[in-house]
Image 1: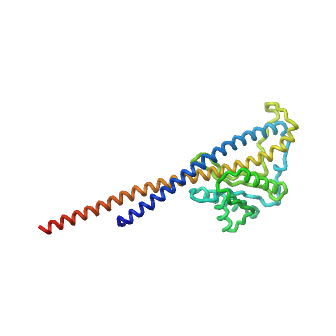
Image 2: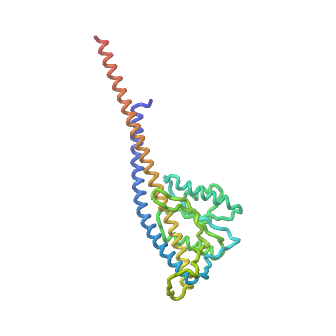
Length: 286
């Protein structure tokens, strides 16, 4: 059985750990609230662009765009979103497992990986998957200008036929307790099924023309989609870290209760022993 001094030392250590975990939980909750607000705004913008794109396609269903054309012969790109820091439970593990499954199916080894986040970069580079590009200092902060720069570079490579396709592997944010690892084909863009010409629809007036609007709209739509994916990933990261820190705080509280009970038992046994010694000594002196 540990001594009273050892139990007290463990109590102080766990109490300090609990305070740190609690502080990290509050910080993650604050970051989650801020990023989630931006995510909801971007989802609203994405919904507006989806509706606008549908109207344009309804007016001219035969339109196409270079971003929609499939390309062969060039390596594809996989953009892997992971966190820069740990302490977020199984968040990174689930993403890495899905990425491994995706790369395992690539029998020709023609996929180049672009890492956003240190955890995925360190894991795969140690196993021989070299980085086509790596962005390792975002730290879960939703830098939309940086996201736009990354997206522009990827679209440029796709249009120059340096990449046959671009897939995004990220964690989709469902709620504060649910986030789902997801693979999305970002390029080439797969347009939604176009409405039938016989279906009733509203008449819209397009200036200068549906074709010109479509030509300008689709790249903007793709940029906002990439920004939305980054926000989904970062919101999921902060949610996972908040839950992990809450679980750690709860576990520390349970340990404190158990150790407090053990300390009280040791103190009670010590007091009982001292009383017994006093009584025994008194009886011996009679």
